Image (tube, rainbow, N blue to C red):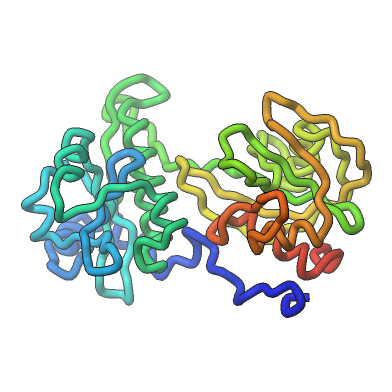
Length: 318
């Protein structure tokens, strides 16, 4: 089916397959962390909120700054340790204040954009996407955890940025990741896709929602599909996962076997939802649908979930 439908090689999943060893043992050694911070072969990713700072480098952009380069830029002193590349080169995330972002935007040496654009447009080498996602998610957590949720006093970063300790009650706070199920409900030769109002014109995607406390991934996939589109599902099978640093989620991809067909849309969640045939879904993946409909870009897990079903049909259930 792949050859008949004209699909090319399977695309890379964005923000996944990091080449970094997170080297957790280094986080507890301030002396070693300081040594790595000062090394010229260490690399720093500069991030301010949604903004990522890139250096202009020929046809591509370079997101890595050296210790000597950041010493000349308006960056803050805080940094988070991301891990080691090839066991020797340290990588860090460095927060950049909003005022500094504005200054860097006006500097022709740099290009300031957001991480989603970087991934979709392929602005940097693919190997940078996973550590950029790690840095963005971790720095976002720090920006919202300056005070203790237990007693309200200030917290301070420790362990290379992987924990914050309260200076008063000594409570320890750790970075959080929010699990999200993203699923394709299928019934025979059709699949269920939905649209949110914020989507670009013509784009349809899998349904998705946060996993609730005390809930399995399978139950979350069934619940969200029913809540958003009124479709009951039975069998649910895990497909793959993707870090999604917007701000700090883990997308857990699934296929779900629909056992009902009448759609009832929750318009607080979706603008529209409908069934698409496998042939339609294939044309949407290839951007050849006669109505101009399409799926999310190849870097997004929704694209992979849909393509797996188009190519393998019921085989996605094992």
